[in-house]
Amino acid sequence: MVRLYLFLTASANPKFVLSFSALVIELVGNFFLIGENYHALRGSRLNSRNTHGTGCTLASCIAAELAKGSPMLQAVRVILLCIETFCKCFDPSSSSSSSSSHDIREKEAATRDFIEAANACLGICRSHGVPLLINDRVDVALACDADGVHVGQSDMPARVARSILGPQKIIGVSCKTAAQAEQAWADGADYIGCGGVFPTTTKANNLTVGLDGFKAVCLASKLPVVAIGGISSANAGSVMEISVPSLKGVAVVSALFDRECIVTEARRLKSILMDSSTPHAKLMV
Image (cartoon, rainbow, N blue to C red; front, side, top):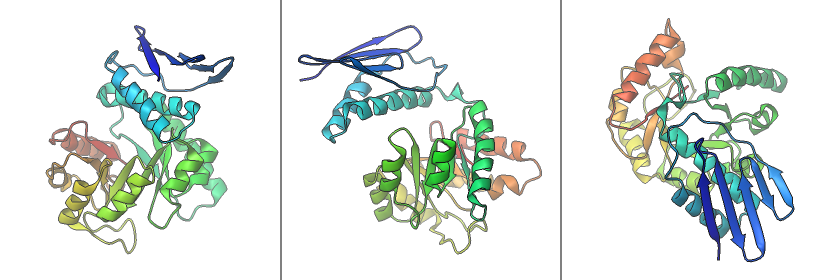
């Protein structure tokens, strides 16, 4: 039997005490103690208005991770990630960027050049509180300590990427079918990107699923879904009008980089997403 005690300070800094008979496990701030052993844990410091309502989330997260056979330390790391994500989701002012996340994609660059470019992008993203994901290359994500990766159906499987990157990192998977969306969920992905919703020149020989195919994947997905492929300010509204709960935003490339002013177009797209019926819709670049 596990007893969980949660104390929240004015700064929403949690303190946990888990009792397993004679074994006492304690988490104070960023230090996790098991008996006489302790581990230093890192997490983002959030300027959030949310200071309560996390106890049930914590308890559920602990139970779920332990039931899956996770070690206690890994379970606690997942708990911290849940709290961080929870606070961010309910405080959309936590990021001042027009974009909710960035994905860096380099198909031809040498590994050293890719890492240097990723590190440069990471510095910019971190200064704005925006996650940076590496497309396809788990090794590059590890080398620069990026926030996660996005993999395709022919890349490293999400379950393998998860075993390498651990529970803290974000993993996205490109999916075109309901079966692929189901597999992404089973493999431990955090979200899926579905498309191309419309024809696109960004990726050669990319099958277009259309709005109907996209909606079918959204309805089947247990994970958040981001629309990809041919999205622009001209059609983003029609994508968001699908109004399926799993649909959380759009990902764009040409819609910004083929425009004269990237900032202006990013703000226009974000305005369209904010006007949609999807709460806190995301723009991924």
